[in-house]
Amino acid sequence: MEPALPSEIEIKLDLSNEALESLLGSDLLGEPDEALQQSSTYFETDDRRLSEKGFSLRVRSTGASHVQTVKASGPAKSLFVRSEWETPLEGMEPVLDHTSPLISEFGPELEVEAAFNVFIERRVWNIELNGSRLEVVVDRGEVASGNRRSPVQEIEVELKDGDPKDLFVFIRKIDAIAPFRFGIQSKSERGLALLDRQQFMFKAERLDLERNIKASTAFREIAASCFRQFRLNEEILLQRRNSEGLHQARVALRRLRSAFSLFKPLLTGDEPSRLQGELRWLAGVLGEARNLDVLLMKAKDSDLRAKLKDARNTAYGDAVEALESARARALMLDFNEWLQCDTDRAGGGGATSEDASASEFAAKALDKMRKKLKKHGSALAETDDEHRHQVRKDAKKLRYAAEFFGSLFDDKRGARRHRKFIAAMEELQDHLGALNDLATGPDVLEQHGLADHPARDSVVSHDDKNALIRMAQSSVDEVIDTKRFWR
Image (cartoon, rainbow, N blue to C red; front, side):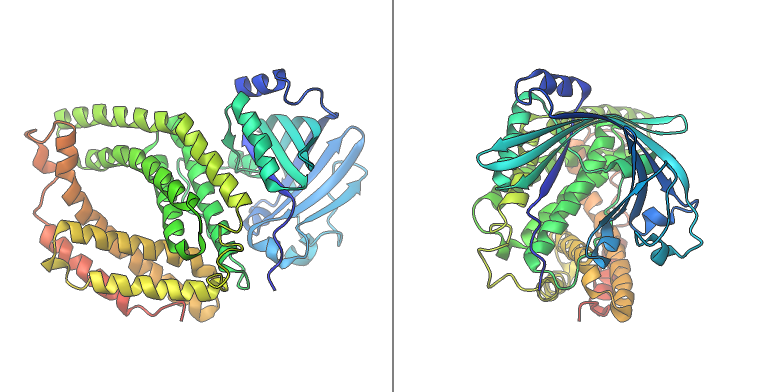
């Protein structure tokens, strides 16, 4: 039987210094019930085995007390009845014994060393709202490793008891005073990021769905994972206007929209299609900038490059403006509230006849999508660009669904077949993507007044179109011939 959804929900919000000052200066919170200074040291092995396996180990000092905490996340979390182990300590040195699963997981010779520190000034409020109990925590401080620093300015709002809707009633009160973005990184993840070379984009993380869950719960986990990928890349895009960050932010939105259409039978009410429309709008704005990036990669002529760069700068300005707009903020708030609160509409209750196990749902959905690709992709040379674009969309949806559901079929045979299937899908997407670039290139040039530029042919050459169509057809056939990992 599937475990019940936890009644406690915690939402993390990231704020600028100015926004946090506005909030603390308002009368929403008043005086805190508690104010603490906390210092934490996080420990790791020299080869990062703890974080790779989904564990974190920290020792936190609050006043004169020291507490060691081991947390399990990701795949590790599902192995245990609980996901957190706390042990009081005399000092700041960790104690590796059987009060946590680290020794049984990594062996008695496990050696750890201090990796980074977190210094926090924490304020806590206990709030009653419409009969619900909330805990609001404001953390300000920094994560530090050597001479590298990362500021922390975040609010955690946790529903201790009551209706999740009240949690969002309160979050909307915060939004009216201080703009924020939903936080998706733990302090442990921020610290680990300081240890590595700076990342300029985040690909989708592997999803670990438990086999016995319902399809509706799988949807919630998949949607949350897509949102996390979007937020990680949005941060990079806002700070650096990086092309790979933009591309992966757009991929994350596409994956999220794919999840909505994939699980459409479970999503009742009007809100899913409204959210889909808003996600399409945001992805479209990012798409304008992405189209110019694609042409710039091919452009060798200096004058054409300069003109494309000007157009790209404008498009990136539009993308950042959209991400910072009230409309995008409302979308993120509405989406997260819907996902957390409307569990009946996110498949949790209304459409029970459709809400099968995730494995059953996945097998049927993958069969249906594979059949569609087979039908639409049977004669690419005899169709037009528009039809081939539709085949590309079919292929993307099948690829995303295969990635979403891979962990449900991860026995030895399933994992082997999954690897081959994804490899075949990647090759197909590359060929169909190249064909799409040929088809859209002239439109993008025309849109930016460059249709008659002397060097236009260098970025939209059609010489290899027939060869690309043949390769794409061969790749469609290869995908259809590849054994299904879900059967």
